[in-house]
Length: 161
Image 1 (tube, rainbow, N blue to C red):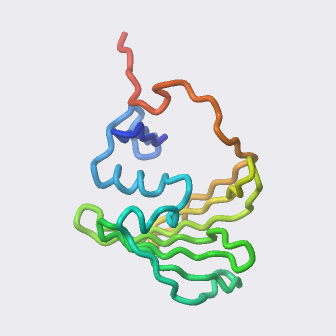
Image 2 (cartoon, rainbow, N blue to C red):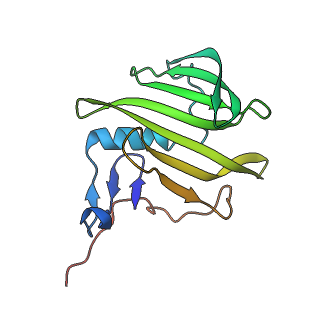
Image 3 (cartoon, one colour):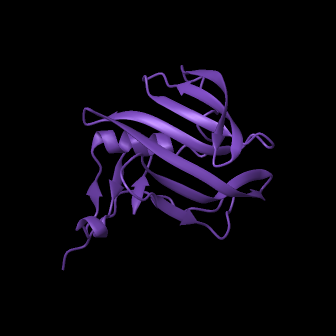
């Protein structure tokens, strides 16, 4: 479980030996917030103080994808690959400095479905470049603007008995 409430990030990582919620370090929160932008890397990049440069096409798993270089205001670098037919993101490579070390994450998007007039990827594969098998997520459906209880993403309050 990972969550961000607009101010704080937290997680529960039972596979890492942590059963209780813990706050995320600042570098992890920053990465999490950047990856969680629901409208994608390109939306308002220039308005946010960044730049976008077209680099031509590159083969991504047999698709001649349009390659864009996005430099964020904070100096972070991302390469966005767009499908040539629908201009939907099929891959995003993000380069970040995490705890003083350069790290490149790769996220592939696929199986797009139109929901609420917008195309949403129902297949997402994401991981650190060169660090083993990526995490794979397959969604059955997407819902636009669901009702969410206030505080849903806030750090859980645990009750001790």
